[in-house]
Length: 162
Image (cartoon, rainbow, N blue to C red; front, side, top):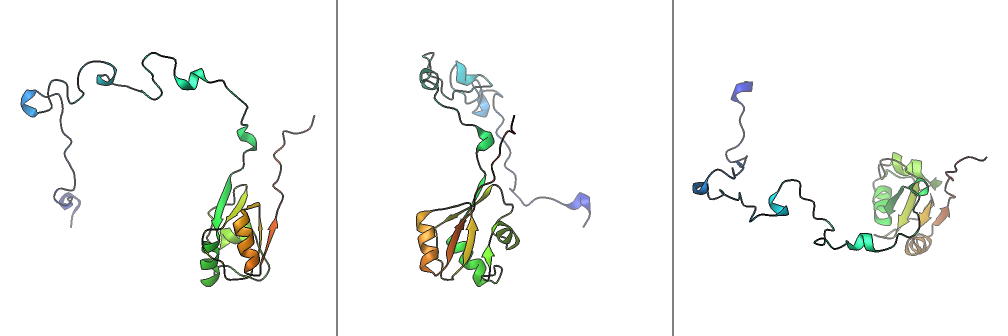
């Protein structure tokens, strides 16, 4: 096989309909854009547009301030995934399971600001897990299985003192 002999499967590519090429094409004149006006032009952005009336998002008052600097990037881990990793032998149950152990086991790609444990799935193994956050149902499920949840304090992102 040579480079010039390589070809796609038949009908692998759909030829785009050429619009605005005369009335015989079936997509002539307005080129399937309807009549005149804003939507017939290019660069239309109608999100939130209310026909000249002040849009709702501009009529409502601004409230509060959400400082993104202090928002955490928490990674969610479900109990069912923990159990599958324990069953597969990727996660050791002796000792405390922390963020680094979850990354090493392949349950997380990176640690982020911490791990939040959620209750989807079932946990049958007694484990001790250290996380930044946990739902009430997940905490109850871990304790039912004979394990323990240790809540770790999140490292503070301060602006420095002064």
